[in-house]
Structure formats: C-alpha cells, structure tokens
Length: 378
Image (spheres, rainbow, N blue to C red):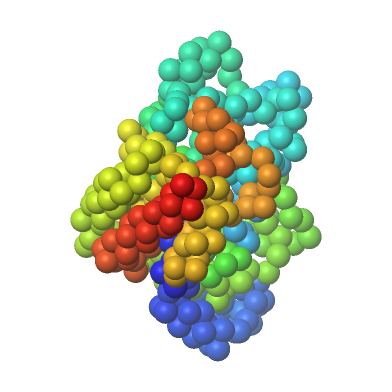
C-alpha cells in the first residue's frame, strides 16, 4: 500500500520507536518524584522542553505538554472563556480544524466570530484589518496551514496585525510542524502541535503559551506542567516526539527540492492532463509541499476511495476528524464550493518517505480509474 494520508497521521519513524523503547526501559521514574530515578525523568523532560523551545524560538517555560493538539486547542478556548469578560468575542478563521471550530462554539456560542477566506482558501486580511479598527476581540485564532487543502495562511502577517492592536494571537500549527521550519512560531502567543503528524507517536502534543502568563487549566488535579496541565507526563512519548521532530528539521535543511513542492506540482500537471474537468483546490495559493486537494471530474468520493484502495493507494476525502459525516466539508463551504462539488474532493498527502515514483504511480492509477468510471457511464 502506497500511503497518501499523512495529514491524517504519519507512520511512526524508526528513530521515534527506538527512542520510545530506550526511554521506556531506562527512564522509569515519575518526573515529580524526589528520588534519583525521578530526577532522571525530570532532567530528560527538561531537556526535551528546551529542545522544542529552541526549534520554536521561545522560552522553555512556555512549553506545556499535552495529549495532543485537540487538548491543547481546547485548553486555549477554555482559558479565554474563563478570563475574558462576558461580552468579549473570539475570532477564528472559517477553515479551522474541528477541534478549534467546535471548542470555540462550545465555550463562546454566538461570541465566536468567523473570519472569512477567499475562494483560494486564504484568510481575508483586509476583512481582519477593517474589523479590528472598530472592535477588539479577546483572541484571534488562525491555523498556519490547512489540513484539508494544504493552503498556507499568512500567519506572520496576522501576528503582526494582532500585535499592532494588542490582541493575543493563537495558531494551530499541527500541519506545519515537521513539514515546514518551526522557526519563529514561538513569537505567536499560543501555538499547538501534535507528534503523530510528522512521524512521532500518537497521544502526545504541546501548547506554547505566553511567557510567565497564568493559564486556567483544562485538566486539574495536579501541579504538573507549572500548574497548567495536571497529569503525570509521559516522558517516553515526549522524547519520541522530539526525536522525530529533530530529524524532520534536519531533513528540511537538506531537502530544499522537496520543500519547493516540485513532485507535487508535476503530479498536479499529470492529474489535470489525464483527468479533464479536474480542479486543484487552492491552486493559486501557497500550499504545503505534500498536500493536493483535488475536485474530481466525475464519480463520488467513496467510489474513488474504494477503487484507489484496491489499486494499493491510501488517500482521504479531507479531515480524518470529520470522516463519516454526511454534510460537506466546512472548509470547502467557506471557500464557496457548492455541496455537490465538495462531495467530489479527494485529498492526497505525502510524507518525507514518499518519493517521486510514488507520486507518478498515483497519477497513473487515477488516470486508469478515471477511464474505468468514464466507460462505465457511457
């Protein structure tokens, strides 16, 4: 099976597995325990925190370990729901991941305002700037890159705008980390990430918080993580996560041709040539090098998925967290795609281990399946 669903979850890297196994065998203590075994765990945890802070460009005490980005994102919304006055709004982009979108609605109801995006999937900066001249929300949240389309958001520009109006800025960097350099993300007030998107283990992530800020915890019952997140830290998975991220950062420094998305662009040209009527979603916008969201010319999503699966390719329809829902993607709806069009979109997302021949094989498989579907209709 050739795997093209890395945006949902990436296979665990060998180095991450080995790091986890070594830590499980050799670092057995609780980081909060006062004895030597606990001290070794505490030191390992501190070094991992310092390493992540170095990559992000922030202070080590800004890092809070979580079970993943869903917990981290819920923590942000929970915190602001407890600290903002009852009239304050939070503004998030209309294309956020469900764990941001739904937690904002849960905690703020009608006070959750959605920032529109263009047909090409990029946040409307003019709208944001105009609205901020009249209103100051308690928080602005925009992801770094969209999980369904791969469209990169201008998070640095948004950060600058928010700073000029003294509004906290939060970015979900789940799809960015491990694919694009983490440098400068630490300048954002709040940043979330998850290990399983770049080859680390499932069940571990982090939240970057403002330095020396008091955060209202989502989970209570312990003083771990500076009182921000109760629960014994999973040292082995944290070290495994950092082993994976360190390798990905090294790969980025040595693989500029991959970051430029040459293989992805060649695949898109083949797809458009072989499948008349196909459309690349967000084609005019900067996108992650690994992601292609394509509006297929004919045939329902499930039919394409079934045929591709039988042909040996694992792809998806969009966010894994919304799979099984009948309604079309809220991301595509925000980009002004009609429901019938949204139900024809497939997402192909590669990883660092995917090679050029894999992309070429996928293009050929799509052309073959398209021919089968077309002839079956005529």
